[in-house]
Image: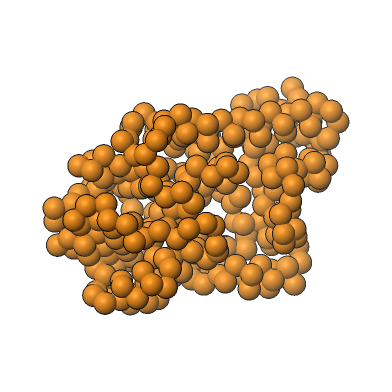
Length: 293
């Protein structure tokens, strides 16, 4: 737990250990947390007093895993992510497991491996919506791309943005849901860059980022362009179907374990790029293949 100021504490969870994330605690007139999947010590601290509001960056359950520990809290999430947070069927669909895996055993394995659970949601987050917690005020920012309903939170008086899973990881942006859009992610990153925050706090990994914030956001964004170029190069070299492209791993480069799951993530992110390229009229689809115009 790291103190930001007298009201705000950063609940850091080092590394990328599912189903956990970094969280933010605001102890003001209103006691509020941003995401709930903190470590056990921080969870014990949170339970000492009622949490009035839980704000969610998005609807992936590694960000709401401990919501059930706060039955009296009002839970906020952007409408676009309600389905994956409240429906097992939607979760399996949008992560590509059901439509691309087409294997009931894989469905069960995925749900068990990810420790999926649903959550109640009581209120919607709207873009540019303000929230006054007492001496602390924040503005909600819809920053889609990682998920359709992904959001960040601007703390104007403190000069930082809590960016959720815009996390500046070496891997780069993750957009492995079937309702993700490449252009959304690019626009969200450009919006963050234009805000010129003094620093950002991320939902995974490093956490508090104060050095070279804008160049690092730009570098993170540009990984999307590099991936898209690799996909175009594959099409040029005769790899036209989704399966042919996925075998070359233009996104992950090497499929992590469990490979059955990450191979589907690879396919979904390639598809999201292909849809983007179709929208730009750079490629077209014919049968099961994708071709340059």
